[in-house]
Length: 407
Image 1 (cartoon, rainbow, N blue to C red):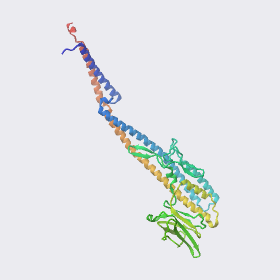
Image 2 (cartoon, one colour):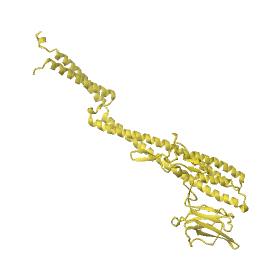
Image 3 (cartoon, rainbow, N blue to C red):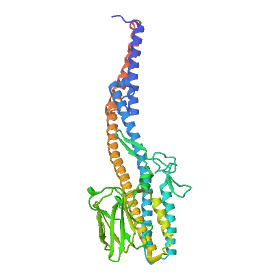
Image 4 (cartoon, rainbow, N blue to C red):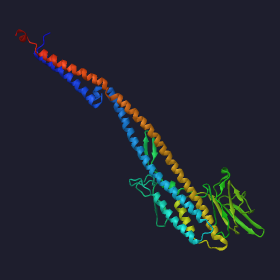
């Protein structure tokens, strides 16, 4: 086979270029630590690496989302801790206000302290997330949840929805709460039914909050217990104001402190009810903690002066109902805090899963993309020898010529 001089030159240069290209590529692999520099180097590995990179990027975003959840829920829990402490302080003041040795002036001091606690509660209910948004306004993050209206009532302006954050591919976690669920929907009485003394009572009858004895017998009706006082003694009768019921207790002799039971409910009335004094029994309803506190303040600002100790009786009945409402509010706050704690626990579990996923993704990407330094170094040395050989043979081949032989 005859080769022209140009062909010899072209083949020699091409061989040198190929060896140089291979050497440069190996050098790039060593310097970058990556085996796959372009998709052409390994199309299958490059495609798989792209998929894994997308999963890793999504996992990083979920991690950022979970950090947001932890920050916001941590702030919300701190605010509710403040609410809990304030409610406990209020409860102590309510117990102190029930001391029979206090006079109207001393109770007014307690009322003043409760007004300060009321302002504290409103401030805590309007807690922010550190970025100008409100924690307890539902999904209306830019709306202040609570403010006093023209009538002096503390009103809620948020909504009932909650904002959620995608904490994993399959889980959403709430990062807000509706203030109405925390502060407004506080059950009165014992949570099932509520007892109260009639405003026009002139006796000294004091009623307890009572308890449920038979849940299956509850009707949810409104009842009244009316007392009759005669020379022969004191009796009471129970009337169902919703649906007449002839099976209810009627003309039962009254003994102070004895249980009064009907339709699955039981409570006690102590003291000396006057003739035609009444006590109402009905299903529990929702009342905001702010309204409960405002009612308690008004109660403590009202003089207990009155005939036969009726003022003290009204005070005792009022404080009993308010104290139960404060206890219910405290239970509600503890329940919400428990929900926040459960959410934070879920976030911790998802963080552990996410960390494992990150480790798996990085290992997979390393297997797909990273260079084997031992192999690459060996290849680099071999390619250097091959390049030197190509260069030397080119020089030797270039020197082959018939004229050189004749000379």
